[in-house]
Structures are given as structure tokens and as C-alpha cells.
Picture 1 (cartoon, rainbow, N blue to C red):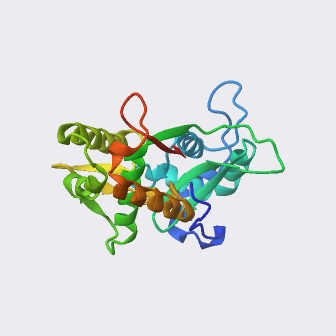
Picture 2: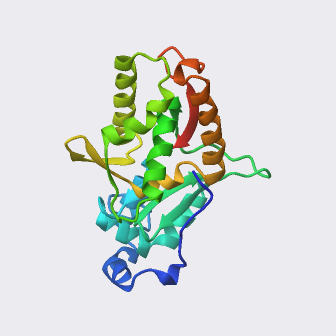
Length: 237
């Protein structure tokens, strides 16, 4: 995930969000026998959603989003106890967590990493660029439009094999990373969280690497694993 955030100060949260979510700040008397937790139910659900990943979106879980805004300080504290930090994009109304990185501390790994093969990484880069260059609040793309931009990397790979791989990658964007949301007829909306999957420095390095790959003959020239896909990167998701 990128170190760049669009997080605003706590007192900059929308007033209506604080008002609607205020009930979540109350300490519950106990949700079950022996419960020692202090967060309200929706705040706990928000915490679980963040840890389960890949992100929490107001569009899909409005009550949890409002609970997160209302109990942000307490939720940040609980995440810090796990060596995990919270990132909130107030404009896009999405939040996610990432592993703390430190040269001074031995930090245990809490969050799972998802391996991206080469085509997955290429697709993430294409989708990220489409999101960042669009002036629309909602960016909806056609699968064939994305596949066309990846065609330069096909090289001598058989067309049917290539199509199978790109279709599989599109499915992983929808179902595993959840950076695409299906809107029907082979089209999907790009989640704003995709901008954080790879930071700007990594994007530049990967873009240069893949440009050289395309000039050298495409994916067919890359080292591949047993499934025919080259490892390229990992993301916390």
C-alpha cells in the first residue's frame, strides 16, 4: 500500500456523519456474558471489516463507515496495538489498514498479503491510471477496453491462452482484490482504493520494467511459474 494518504484531521469530519454516528461512542454494557469490549456493535463490525480487508466502503457498509468516523480514535488505538495503521480517504469514503513498517522494531505480520502475477499487476496499473486520469466521480470501464491496453504485452502468447489469463485476472480484480464492482454487461466500476495498492515510486519502477518487457517481446519472454504467469508483486488485501 502507498504511504500517501488523503486523511483529514478528526475535527474536519462532516457534521452530519458525526451526528448520525454519535450513538456508536456509547460504551455497551456487554453484548454477551463475559464481554469486556467497550466499542459499540457497529464500531466492532467496522474494525472486523478493516482487518478482514481489503477495505471498508461507505457505499457498501454505511453504518460501519459512520461508526468508524465516530469512534476513529478508539479504533486507531486498537489497530495500533496490533502494529496496524488506519488510512481513511474522506473524499472517496473508503478506509483500509496496512502493516506498520519499522527499522527499529520487530513487527509481527498481522495482515495477509495477496500475490499478484504479472498480468494482475499490469491490470492494477491500467485500472489505477484510468481512475486517476478520469474527471468523473465514478469511473466505469469495459473489460475489453482494459484488455486492449494489455495487448501490447501479449507477444507470441496464443490468443486463446491470453484471453483466458486476462479473463481470470479480471475475475480476481472483482472477487479477490475487490477493486472492481460489476455493473453488468462486462463493465465494472473502479474502486478508489486501487490508488493505494501500489505507491507512485513503485508504479514508475514497474512501468519502466514492463515497457522493457513489451519491447522485448511481451509476456512470452518473461519467466513464468507453473501456471504460466510470472510473479510480479504482492499487496496487502
